[in-house]
Length: 212
Image 1 (cartoon, helix red, strand yellow):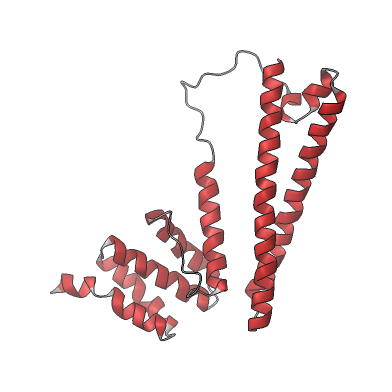
Image 2 (cartoon, one colour; image 1 turned 60 degrees about the horizontal axis):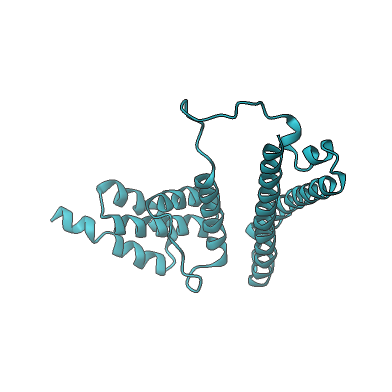
């Protein structure tokens, strides 16, 4: 009997959420999760819990619930039609952070094969090795591209943070939609700059290593 009640516990939470009773969802969700549920039910509870927290302005707590949800299913997506832009923004931010963390290289192990020759500092800055080797035109072009991309990344990070903060503070439908579009545009620009900066730096490092 207890197992049946646990398995059915997620359904009343969904009814409460759809009715807009977010406070009750927040109060009841932790006990449902600690009582033990199936994986699918736990994912539903975490989604309702996170969405309710964000709906009441507790974005940091909601982000934590979304992290636990994405840890269970990294490919999880929210329905763009039934989910408010404010909730999607927090979810997208958490998913982006977790995706970038997964893409980072693992720490070097003891059995890692290292280069026999030390890598000079010039190899870490794209273009400096080419300039040192008297290939000034291509070296300065590579360096300028890296500096421009890195500068764009810095600007987009600051602009996105400001736009995201303005979005979270928006209170009317018009300002919410407008600030969301601005934040989304800077979010995409930041992603492009991260990619171009990484590609240019990687190319510059590879070029420097091959030239040694």
